[in-house]
Length: 394
Picture 1 (cartoon, helix red, strand yellow):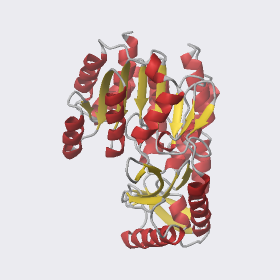
Picture 2: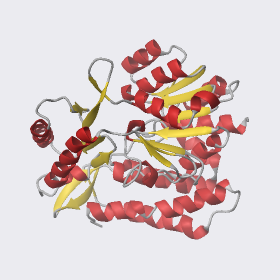
Picture 3: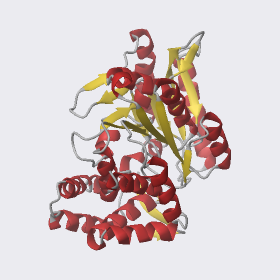
Picture 4: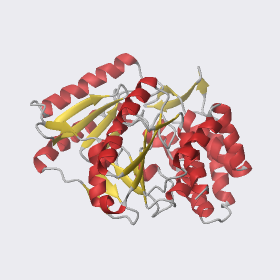
C-alpha cells in the first residue's frame, strides 16, 4: 500500500497514546489495556504493507517516490509487541541475537554502577538511550525503552534527558512516552529546561542576537515551501527550531537524497546565513554531513563561542541547584558533542561516572583521554538494560 510521508508520520504519531497508556499501566503494576496493544499491532501491520524496492521502503512526497529505510519504526513496534506478548526474556533474547556481546556488556555495566548511589543521571537521547532513527519526526520512544528507563529514573533524584533537539513543538517531550512527573527534560543542548513538575526555564538570549535567529528561521521555513527542497523537512532531523539554534537536515542515515542535491542544499543554506550575518560573529554553522546546525554564539573568555552541552549542564545545575544536592553523577553520551558534558561534570561535581555508547575506536580513545574511567558499551539496548538491571538491585 503506497502512502505519503505525511500519512506515514501521522501513523507514527498514532503510536504515542497507546504506548503512553501501556507504560503508565505497567509502571503502576496494572495489566495494559488490550485495545492499546491491538492498536500497536494494527499499525505494525499497516507499516509492513508499505512497498519495498531494492531493500528500501517507498513513500510519496509531492507525488514523487522517496526511497528510505523505516527500520527503526518497524523494528521498535515489533520489539514492543514481542515484549508485551512474550515478556522481558524474549526481548533480551532478541538483543543477544543482534549483539553477541549483550550479556557480557550488561554484566560489566551493572558491576560499574552497583556500588554507587547515583544522585543525578544526565543522558543524551538518540544513540545513547534510544536507538537511532532516520527521521526525528517519527523517532517515537518505544514502550519497553520507556519502562526500562523509568525503572532506573525512580532510583535517582534528578533523572535528566538532555538533547540538542527542541524541548517541545515536535521536540523531546513530544516523542517521549515516559510517565509524567518522572523525568527532567532539557532541550536545545540544555538551553531550555522542564522540571518534573512542568516548570520551564530557559537561558536568556540578548535581543540583539535573537533577531539573527528569527530572521534565519523565516528564511528556513520559506525555502522548505519550495517543492524542490520540501523533502529536507521530512528526512533526518527535518527542520528543528530550537532555543538558540536551528537545525535543518541535508541528508539522513539512509542517503534518501542524492549527494549532489544534498551538497547544493548545503550551499544554499550557507549563503542564507552569510546574508543574515555577514560579520559571522553571531551565527556559527556546523555541518555534520547529515544536518546543518546554525548556532547562536555565546560570549566566551575572549571571543564568541558555540554553546555546547557542557554549557547546558552548567545552566541546568544552576537552575536545579544541583551543586548543593548532588554528589554522584552518571553522565551518558554517544558522540563528540556529548564530551563537553563529561568535562563539565568532572569539574563541577565531587564524583562522576560516565558511560559512552559507541564502537568508534577513535572516539573511544578521545573519550578515554578526557576520563579514563568511562565505561564503553556498544548499543543503546545494552545501556538501558544495564540501567534497568541496576535499578532491580536497588
